[in-house]
Image (cartoon, rainbow, N blue to C red; front, side, top):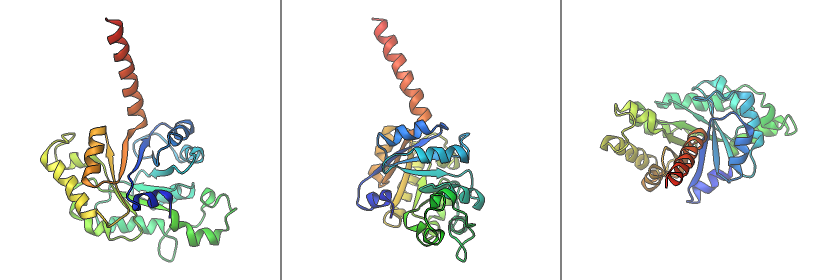
Length: 254
């Protein structure tokens, strides 16, 4: 079992962030913080699989490299697994059947449809292929995003899929699906978050939330979310420089 899953099962929160800058330096630096995980985002950033592979190689210590694939596609999932991702995150999973589609993409035949050719995942063949084939699931983190009204309605079916080790709620898409984009204080948004937490708690090791702000991170943690992503690299960078400029301008004006 991956150390990330062990930590979550021990009752400790697991903390990380999104990486959208296509740089192994950024991935390495964040792993030295250290963070429990980084999500390398291939859905909403220009990062490609070659760059993602270099970023995974750069990670130090026990930081898990989770690749968010662009879509629920067995081709995309296969490529992420073959470059040695510690885990995958699949967006826009709205039903039990779509969750089972993720499972089929992760599993090798005869249970699934993943093509055999793990390349870096088997450390370029230095791990015998049969050994990798038999043991890769033991350490793999498989997560899906629950981000729509439909997904919340079908949550029990999604959670019933054995290979999935966790779910993640993305507040942007969820609030948009509820027709209240960005209005995180609205009762219907908060009730949706609570509903997911109450129904998912104890069913899977990882119950994750993408937190745009520290206050939202704390709110989600108190609701029972045990895997918290603190914003994303580019947003933290921009906000830090905004604060530096504001501090300087305030001091210079005295």
